[in-house]
Length: 333
Ligand code: WQD
Image (cartoon, rainbow, N blue to C red; front, side, top):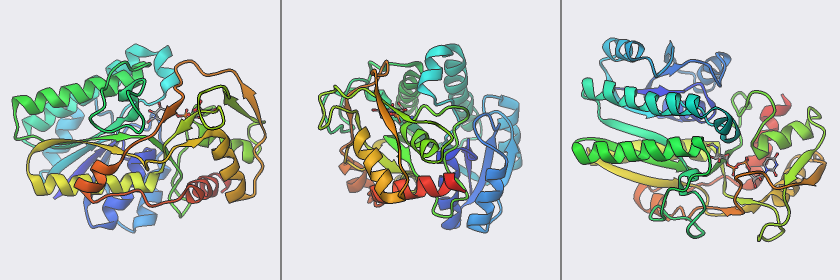
């Protein structure tokens, strides 16, 4: 038996592949390195001390996917991490985002259908909730009102999966809504490495701490939050990766169904709290200035992760200190 992981050389994908290898799963990765690098594959093998099967290619290419399914008759499940994921970039390039993320998912699902492989885990996002109906967010909260094409692609793919399951309930689908992934594997060999100037908070903080960037701009301190800065549910990427293993376990046990889970810690931290926690955990200074609010930002977003705890027996375990230390440990190398 093997698992096909699209985007398996990426940030969340690589950490999930390591955890899957650690429990003895056979892994096939397809990645086009549009937002990852080939050396990550070597790092994965070094950490897990296991081999992986790899195809360099684009998951939107039907022929490439069919070749993989033809050459790997032992595939039993697919985890789809591949997709563009920059909120800001998606506003500038909506057609690229809709084409890559939605067409990619459609071609992947149609190929799975052709080969009668119906276990599917989808990398979704808390952005599907748009402006939160209530905090903390549960899976029953309304979705929609997404404020950027990236979030809208996640919303549309969730709808495609719901319609697919309704048409054929032999599918076995888990939709995992990530909150804010941060941190890196304790080895420091894999981690988050966005190209160019980071949009996300933690990659920006580590570059300021490392001297690559001058100071952090805190986007607004006049929100209705504990200290006026934005509050988010930061979750260690290894906890997130382990959530995928539990989702796979659920799919293997249930044989069919459509399941939706928030993967978060249930705790919200403000930007100022993140800066202070990072400085305390690493001993590095993070100079900052207060800047205007960022277009599309919401004040507060954090999860109620009880459903995943109840149904998957999964709970985020790593502390904020570990998130900060592991982020810095990866970057300072
Ligand atoms: C967090 C907080 C900012 C940068 C996005 C996507 C989500 C997921 C994670 C992919 C906010 C503040 C940030 C900076 C700042 N992406 N901030 N200065 O916007 O919550 O979520 O990334 O899966 O889908 O929507 O994350 O890290 O960009 O921002 O003050 O330089 O940090 O205003 O309050 P966000 P973020």
